[in-house]
Length: 250
Image 1 (cartoon, rainbow, N blue to C red):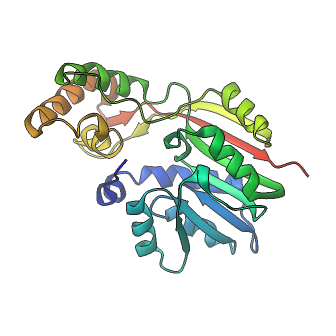
Image 2: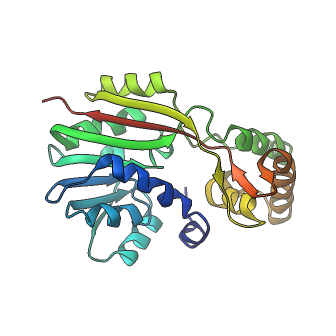
């Protein structure tokens, strides 16, 4: 998936703002070596680095890594697919915020995480969980369907339930310590909040359509969602988050 990093940083700062709470759960320490998995443009990588830890940011998006290197030139960022990373017994912790749901080879990623951790190392992550953005995605898929002559694009996200993901962590060599699924309605900025969110995160449903039908379909989706997700306070996305912590056994 191609990312519009300018739109991402301008309109979707909630991604790393909410992620700051996850950093407090990570509790990075000076001298630790930590991997930020799916680091995006690097704001949380930088926050972890301020603890004195040695941080490596990793992302599979060339656009995101380029933006991260521009934002924080003193930090180390690696362009790589998480399931294919070759780190072995190198990190005291692996951290991931709002990224794992984009990694469809969940088992491959968790096996690579377990391999990258030192014994006793911890994995602290938050991702979209079961039911995440269900209202938004159902509306998009229903409304774009008539615009396609064949099948509409497949979902490109993975939103697991607690039991599913905890079992997968255990199978990949990580001992589950905590797993929590919770609703987190997330405010979107401005009158174009939902349209901007869709352009940022679900544009793959629209990008292959000709320009005029594409914009018409987007308008229809926004109109469909307005009664459910737009209040006097503005737009919000129906987020559900899965937060987990686990360790690699000694």
